[in-house]
Length: 117
Length: 107
Image (tube, rainbow over all chains, first blue to last red; front, side, top):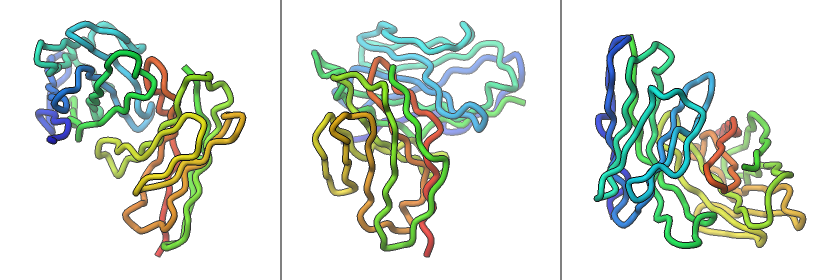
């Protein structure tokens, strides 16, 4: 079974631009979560989508948004980019069915390295 | 969501067992303990998880104390490829990764 895939792998943008990152979950996985990783703040949860609905959200400004499509693929958008948005953006998927929430293992993709100049 | 505390760094000799501790004193009764590792800016890799019983798979063993307030990940025969940052996480509505333990396996 193919793993979580993320595109693009590397991206360079300038301040003020916007960016869209894509994530394809493992086949059969219905939940997609996004994380931001920076040297200063570590790995931080952005949001989770399930059945095209956001079910959890971390503590990030509204410039960070996401969506999920009917095939479970997800996109994350960052508007009005700032230098501090330079980071590794990670996507993770899990099955998330019924009462398996707490034992539902997340599997991570390789990440998208975003550099904001 | 329960938080975890891990030592920032550890060394281990190649071929020896690596024992990585984690404190999770505020864990709830139905929350699981997960371990992941991340090798130099790759995506975190799932290792193992457990609820209250000790668990073992092909990668590692997980020992959870009876009161569930702490756990230890054991890599039985560490190799150089096990050098990574290891994260202990308590499952909840979201995964809180913390700062992890940077394990260096020394030849």
